[in-house]
Image 1 (cartoon, one colour):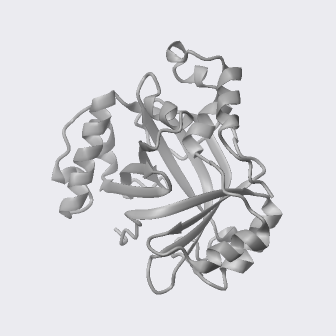
Image 2 (cartoon, one colour):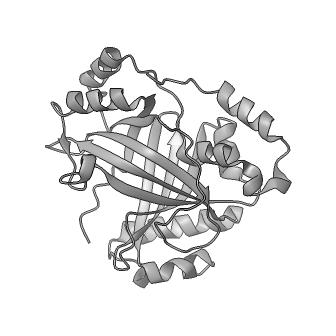
Length: 271
């Protein structure tokens, strides 16, 4: 398995930009960063990202986003293709304001259904012997059990990623063609047939850094006139799908109320 270059703790700023602006930003960023190893040599510098998001039957994690809870987390399975030998990362993504903390463990694909069914994590479920990966998987399992989380939504998109050449302190991503559809099983698949596209035609720009805010990030925002906004792929995807397609009985709001609440707390920074 390739080295996992996950930024375990970082700051993350998101923007919505037009496809034309995204191309200009690519040129700007290329003078500061290099394409990461997965973007190199790919068509349009992009590779597919797939995630299956877990949530409770009353969509607790989704409502934490809608209500703007400062300290919240997501549970997701992250993978990149249909290769049966490739790992599925069981990932916890915690947010506190703009600070992001991630923990994840690379799981063998044949172990995914077992773990989602409630089996306690064991070392042999992982494609790694690192203690922190088992600890992350155990925490994932605990949080999953605490709220009764099960698979709810499959999200996929094309990612163009730029990274610091010397270290992993700065990272810029451009996410295109974000698609989301209901997904209620532990099946690991890249196929999508009945999906919504919550951000089309916009591109999601994310500026990520681990320590000091890079001065050229500020220059980028000023040059292209972009405005920071909320772009939550899971939550926006649920809005686009309509949460009645997931768990209608628990929602005290109509879809119209939901959209109004969601939009009112976000700034549309499209340029």
